[in-house]
Amino acid sequence: MTVGNICFYGYVFGQSGVQGFYGEPGEHKIHRIFRVLFLGFSFFGMVFVAKTVTLYGKVFPISSNTELDGYKVKRWFPKSIWFSFHSFLKGYMLNASQLPNLGLERHLQYGKWQQRKNPFQISISLTSNTLQGKIAEVRQICLLLQQYLPLSKYKYALQLNESCPNLGHDQKQDPSETIAVLEEFRRMIPGLVIIVKYDLTVSPKTIIAVKPFCNGFCIGNSLGFGKLMDGKWWKKLFPKGSPLLKYFGGKFAGALSGAPLFELLMQWVIKMEREDDSVVIIAGDGVFCKKDIERLSYIKIVHGVALGSVASLRPWRLYSLITYGNKIFRKRNL
Image (cartoon, rainbow, N blue to C red):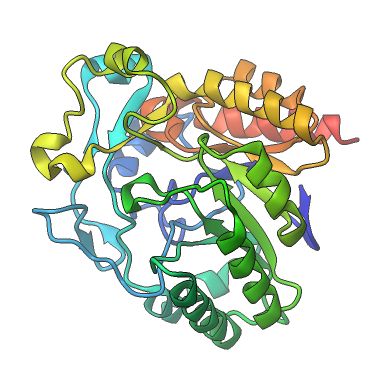
């Protein structure tokens, strides 16, 4: 899939973080078990998208959120991730992870992104509450990228994460701040390929307004608890409310990932195509089977798919979905 001036070697992307910060096997400890138990568990053929980082590190103690051991998740089952036997069977889970990371410069200093041979994406989230603060963050981020990952030597795209529900991101109908941020990125690093990531609460009008200032969109992130759908929909999944409240309180009810989001994703991309059929979308909420990929491939604006929670909830399907997704989208684009 070609985005801007970068040809990614595939049409199936990882959701940011599904392979950790660097795509190493041990970054998510549970993946060690999956590799032994499931022959179908492999990320081979998936375009790597790094776990979201922020300019300044956000490392949380175990009492409040996900704990890191260096850049790896310390626990096999962090308290910020919830699933039950029933939810596993139905294909959904909650997370209250607030983008734990060591800060962009520390991650760049490891030198692991510089060793990647194929084009990839670095996911970045801005944490300031003001436009002035965000612009200041962008300038520092760009200086670090120019120092450690100059475009003259490395091929990568930046994925601007505008939709982390556990950071309180508010996808306002007025996209002026996002546009100003994108303009600053382009001013600082001409030629930088930028993909903006939103969740399903984003309005097509926002997408249309932001489109001239980026190269495409990744639509699909965990959906903040209680968002978008009415209370009956949420109560069907969680009759007693969010189980994460007992750990994190009212601020961290968590965000939903998994199969229940797929039909919402389909509704969103169909609506978006009616508004503007020239948008470039990588779609990925609740993609759990080949039929899901096939249905998305019929939508003109969907140029690729992103896989995330399926790696945890249906790990035995992962490799076959990657292979099928690359095949069906490559065939469509011939």
